[in-house]
Image (cartoon, rainbow, N blue to C red; front, side, top):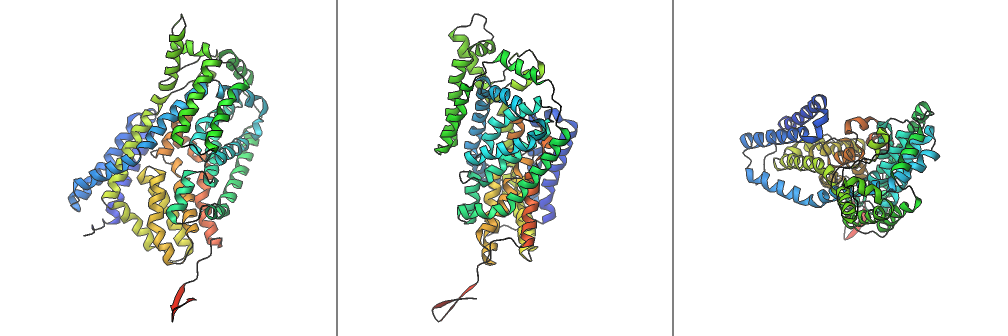
Length: 487
């Protein structure tokens, strides 16, 4: 027997509780938002969901328990990957890879053109690698450092990096989200990518124009780039040989080596580079004055798992090259687990289904269908806390509706990507939002207004649908006397 759907107003209560608590946390406890306050907010909202469902609709606790175990179990590999990203970004910094990129980038990049260049570079790297997370954790950190040296506000730089990275991720045939969206919707991968160009090309074009205008307005003044050059040269062995590490990583990605293995091998390559090129740095991190193999080993281990500081002689440069290691991702992992609990409770209680059912009833034409799909994708990110779950559920909810109306699956997959994929990084409690905030060291709410591509994409999806740039509906087929006739 199918469960009775909760009333939409009842289903909306846990989500409103969560949003109110998160907003309050951001205002009153901004420094502890990721360190525990947001986690408490997620658990409280989940508790409200469970209480309403059990007392009003008599849902069994075992239903919630099974859904939580299933959801967290499915996300276990992603959680380990988060820890590996923390290790990789730290080893890339201490091995000299990121300092080298910053050192040469500061000298060759123009302040006025930096924002569009940062967006384009991130897009190209993400397009070639198929992953926005790795792009932001590696090249993104270097671009953030270059932006600091060029006196570009960090929020602007973060927005440009994220916009470019998510554009490349969406358009790459190697992207897991692109493959997932097309497969769940039942669309051909390359047709899916081709139809996405109707929305992504205008979105990224507008984004680049905005960054160009912002760069011309804010560019032109540097804050002593010599300070960065001197500081980096003083602390690290700056050498183009360190760039063999990202080249090696690029080869692994090109060969389609699984993300888990790629991150481990990339980190190992960076560790070897640090042993060869940055021995003094490792000894200083170990805080053992006598040096020796033990000091080098301790320094290397600390780089991988905990916070490290390198003295460059300048405080602002010290902050730039500091690392967090795997330990720096633990607050993110903690919040992801709490977010998964909230999302699981919303699913088990059928409250999420109740909210999406309201959207389905409002469908009247092509525009309302796409608008509902896009709205649902954003809503699922707010509730589920994970873009992969949002993509799967969004495509599953609407797949039958699109088929009944004769629309090609590429329209569903495109609408899902334009919403569930790109807006995930804008929600502070999603895995994407928390990861990029932790990696870049900038709160999600701070960089959010400047992620123009991510903001424009869902809007553009609706505009393009209203203008009629959609995969044409399949004509209905009727069987008459054993022959198929187009209706």
